[in-house]
Image 1 (tube, rainbow, N blue to C red):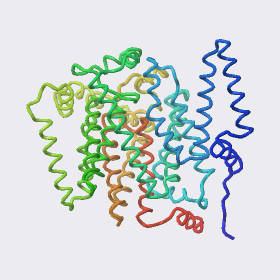
Image 2 (image 1 turned 90 degrees about the vertical axis):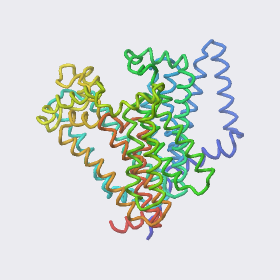
Image 3 (image 1 turned 45 degrees about the vertical axis):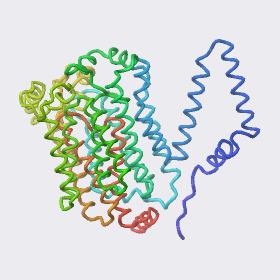
Image 4 (image 1 turned 135 degrees about the horizontal axis):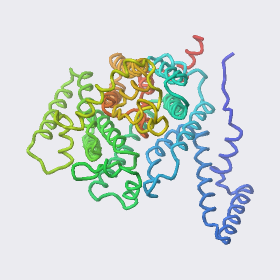
Length: 505
């Protein structure tokens, strides 16, 4: 007898849709609800309790958001994506860090994850296909490594370990729910368009900050954090962070999405659309440059290099590589010295730059500790976190300035090997899928994803670039969507894939 799956939340979902969407509260229940809200608001305002109606309005918006995440998880995926882009901006406008909105984002991701399970329409078992991929195996292995860190004898307490595990589990949920929800080529096309437009908006606001200056509230926010102004003021100007939490997150998002946009634009047959996408990519590259993050300078060359490796036989690729090389040579060697932004980018490869040399000396200084501690010093023991939570630890206040070095010091060389395996699994699986695909469109998309993910992996050498919001939403979604693209290329429907998995069990 064939298995059928009913929607677990169908009765409640149907009633809510009937009252709010179809009747639009034009019903006895709606009149009663709106009447009570009006009376309560009028009474509170009369009693000079102005904030209470505002809080109530926020509560209503929150309830609607939770409803969308639970009962319309596909739309919820984009709700959390938009929320992740603007999650830090309210604090910028307030002028100080007072609203703890990051945990709210994690809760919404949990609701979308649950919604993707409760409202699934196909036969159960679809996600089992995803678990068998090399990337999933690498994620599971890294999860085990993080969990083992709870028993690390080199650190006392779990003050930093618990938030780290929670955030990693959130990323796993993004990885799984993106695979569940984006189950058609049409949905993937929208996913790509959404992130291109979102990155363009973020970059455009960063350009606005550069051209017209920070808003007074944003300057208050910068000044409220000790040492923030000194860190941002480089080369005679302030580095820009747009809506995001910091300049690194902004620079990496803008640079990686510019690469994604350019690779897709190269294959556009419609000249107007190609011109528009190239313009959007240029704005993103400007935003990347205005962030002042020198590490991001390598993003576009690294992405185009991998793209060239995948498509070296194409005439379009040869022309693209030639044009990019000429533009790069012009930017780095042209006699233009009046631009602080361009001057800072040029110091990326300057062997005499003291900042870069200091980081290199720090790496060599701390290597003996890494070699002697296979499990590392413990999660959260290095840098400012270590100085705050574990001030007596040998790694406390040590500036890692590198995602790879931080993992090596805190999780040991064993954890570093596992993390490198995770990164290599991403590249291997993507390249393997690319050369097995037959669909031109699927090959273009997976080449664009690889050209976007590879530079982010490379930038870990000098920055912590994986796990920053909102880039992490795109990054972990892209990992599972490579598997989806392979399925689209093979013409396998979601229900067929799930049925095959169920029959094999």
